[in-house]
Image (cartoon, rainbow, N blue to C red; front, side, top):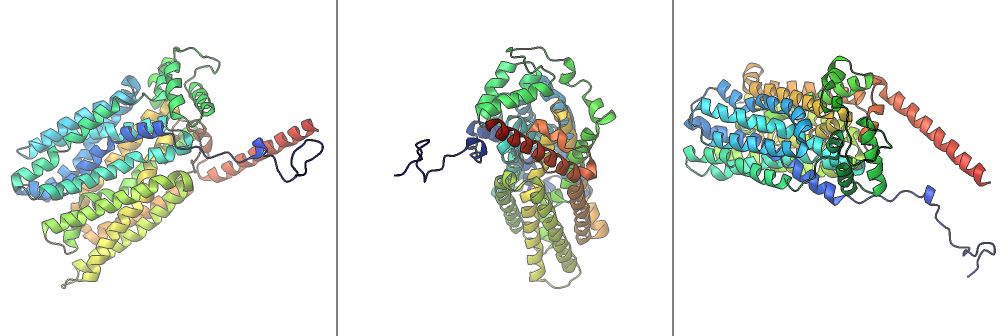
Length: 526
């Protein structure tokens, strides 16, 4: 074998240059994965309640008489009650920590599920919905925040989509529970359907005890040594752990050269002045973030997902499926499809990016809603049973929930939990969840009345029009956030409709500075 006389290196061998080799893709951090998995399990509570109520109401009405309006209210009111929970969750999680807030959410929902299961009249049932709603509000706000704060940047999209995965799994469990307990006597069956919801909350509260506290919350409390221990376990490398700690310290107002185990943090970082910075005197970047964070939550619900999920049995009945068990079976198919596609989405978020998935998802939802509206309109105006129109309705519902689950569903939670600055994150996310729940409550509490006023087909055409507005909003205002650290997010926002130009200019500057750096290295080497 010939060698280069100067260096003794084989002539056919090329030595790698470390600085220019592509970095190896880090493996998923299993500890961060486990923490995110456990925290996100709280979302099962909301999913189960949505799923179980869609079928349980068929049997509840046979025991507790109620009008269509009362039915709408009892099904959708939990979303408004959850507002109280999500409004309080931001401050509670800053006070007692993210971990104990999750346990608190599970305890409240446990009580609510038992109250609903033992309800003897409409008012008693409403009290149970109120208590469960507060627990759901807490769970919805805290799970994405905790996960975003624990996850490394390389897999944050994957991990932060877990809450939506568990909402879907909960919906599926609710649908299966409906079908399973529908065989029992009417007066007992629906009580089991609602009461069994208390069981997951016990497991969740116990599981959370094995989780660490959020490193960002620990830094906000001045507990730097504890935060470093958690970051070392949840980061892809020791270098990333050090970098994340430095970023969080900077965001919390702690000097970078401060390496004490415990330090005192200015009190303003415990919640005071946050609402002022968020609403009254926001910077252009914070205002842009707030519009995007609140807007994505509004459009997620305004495009009609809860009407489809909550009222699936009613939609299938209008489409021509009359038997109760057949309606529940068709509804179970919706749950399986929704859960299957959300699992697909979790693996695509960090590979494809937020924007492409979101825009393609909403475009598909628009087509599905138009298909569903068309099928239902044709059926309601026909005197004969049209098999093809029934198939169109079922196919459109399955396509709609699939496309929702691939983009709009998980990305709403991922995006809104990662864009807010550290100091504003808990309150910013709780505002997003509040808008999400109000919109969901309005949609689910007006669906039957809306269907009676403009026909059921007309209701879905309206949702399609709202989804068109959503697509334009997302396309013009939402920057891509894939691969950015939480502390880099603010630099992406602030120029509203001109964010593309700003991002291109910044990328050009970075490229130039890299080029200058390489030239400098070459000249130094020479």
